[in-house]
Each structure stands twice: as C-alpha cells, then as structure tokens.
Image 1 (cartoon, helix red, strand yellow):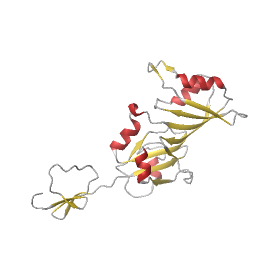
Image 2 (cartoon, rainbow, N blue to C red):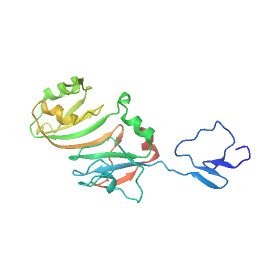
Image 3 (cartoon, helix red, strand yellow):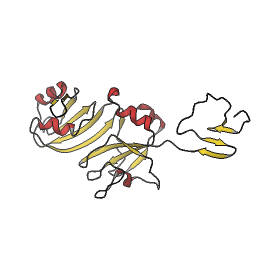
Image 4 (cartoon, one colour):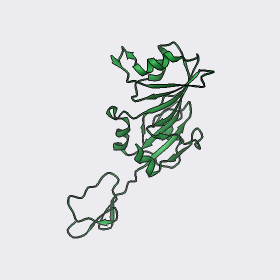
Length: 211
C-alpha cells in the first residue's frame, strides 16, 4: 500500500484502516483480487415453484432467473410450494439478515383467499395473537383487513414474524381453509405489478435502501 500498488474501488489505497467488504473491487499490481457485484432481485413466484436452490421434483426460483451464474444467490424469506408472490434473492448476507432478523420486525403483507366468509371476530383475534402449543409461543399481533366486505372471502394480512405455515394455522383456528395465498410486500418493498408470474428484475438502489 505504501508503494501505491493497491487500489480499492478505483481509488489508490494508502490507509491501512480503509474499510473493505465482500463487494469491494480490489486490484494489486494490475491483478484483480476481488470483483464481486452485489445483486438484489425481486421475483414474482408462481404457485408450484419451490423456494430452493435445487430440487429434483419441482422447478425452483433459481431456475426462473435470467443469467448463467446465480450460484451465489440465496433466498430471503421463503414461500411454500402453493404460495405465490414476492420473493427476494441476493448475495448480500448482511442485507438479508436485516430483513429476516426477528428483532427488526419487518412487515410482510399477504392477500389471503378463504373458503368461508370472514367477520370482525377474525380481526380481533389476529390483533391479539395466537398461542401455538407445539412451539410454546404466542404470535405477535397481526393486522387483518377484510377485502370486499360484501363477499368477505379475502383479507389482507400483515405479519411481523415468520412462523411455520403461520397464516394457514391462524385461519385454521376458525376452521376456515386458505384457498390461495399471495405475498404482496416485504417492508415498504411491494411486488412490481409489471412482473408476470415467473418474471424477475433487479432492485434499484433506492429500493435496496428502503429495507
């Protein structure tokens, strides 16, 4: 460094206290030592596709992505096989931890279609939380808004945690089967309406910063 042989992100590096991370572009004597670009992707997951990097039976979200090398991507908050909607993928572990850390309580909103009509009782129960004996926990208060009150078979549900099959289990207390489940948003980041099922795009720097 004292000889001026190292550059970081195109700038001559002389300070031994210079901070670098996994995405810093580092060159020594003209040889690239690290060249890794941060990647943040929004995907519209269809029903029937699994949130996994590999699967022998089903198509995965990785299979849906454009590009030849997605090997370093991981999934931020999985959806099960029969759930559609917003899935985020990245190679930035710190970013995904901020989204998924329970302490941060990042909101996730779903459109839920039920077999039977909803009532005010559901709204109150979701706001209080449910006790799950198997895990010996009580869920955090969740927001439920009935969509199209005349029909009453759909609801917007916002969770601040991610328990196993949580939404289906919560509606199961009312013996009301979930017919369809679709994730609309994570935090302030909403699924792009222009993306058809199976399509994806990279997030803008502004979108990345909102999480």
